[in-house]
Amino acid sequence: MSAVIEIEGLSKTFQSFRRGRRVAVDEFDLLVEAGQIHGFLGPNGSGKTTTLRALLGLVQADSGRMTVLGEPSPQLLPRVAGRVGAIVESPQFFGNFTGHRTLRLLARAGGVPVARVDEVLEQVGLRDRGDERVKGYSLGMKQRLAVASALLKDPQLLILDEPANGLDPAGIREMRDLMRSLSAAGVTVLVSSHILGEIQLICDHVTIISRGRRVASGRVEEVLAGHDRHEFLVRVAEPERAAELLGAAELTATVDGDSLVVGGATDPTVISRLLGEQGLWVSELTPLRPDLESVFLELTGSGGHLSVPRQVDGSGRPPGDPSNASIDLDVRGVDA
Image (cartoon, rainbow, N blue to C red; front, side, top):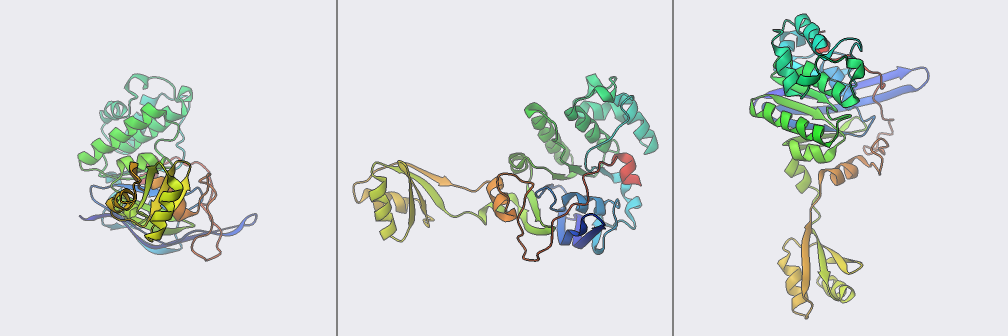
């Protein structure tokens, strides 16, 4: 596959009087190849949005090399801007304009046939709401409108920052189906999201960032496999006795009520054989596979709240995305 996005050694530091020096991105690398749906994950303040803004020329990086569709960014980004659609941070629109009028204006500004407006409204499920004023839209509808604006140019590369924000479960599923259909049509998608279950369902590759540094990257199944502890949930009539037998066989066994969590056995038949030979019959033997959420929390050091990561790289540097200020990154944002 050819690289659609390449980032090597990206660094960005912000300085403010009130908050001092903050390292937002620190020697970060990212590779997105053609045809991928690539998940970009990290806690709040980890550097995701700063990375996307730097890639699209919306903030100047301190150092590093970036290319988009083979062109150096941001220097030659205008050469490929017509093939890139993106939304970064919360979209902003004129409330008194209808959704249809908003997209018509963006289409004309971007040199896109106005006929595309109805097509993209249909794609994001707003065809019947296009004549309503944007100020009456829910947060989810505004998010759909932002995605529609990014699709206007029929892009080869689509960059979506939290596209499921504000969507209900049905809307999240529709967004998932949309990304799959775009990928099937040859569009490369880079998507950031806090809905880790969705990322695991939709993405084939993933990159995880924490404290501005890459902590994992690769195919989703490979990232998960790298954190598989080969543990099994075992239900048996005498869990305490079973734990002793398994421990004597140099397996780890932790009793939890009427079950055990057994580790160190790559072949589950070893567990059933050891217990069966002593007259303990296993009623349940279930592999405990890591999911993307558990791996994410382990790598980023996040607890129950994803916005509070701990330091993982030993640098002692504070976290940082520069701000939560909203920007209008639709067709005009990419063309800027």
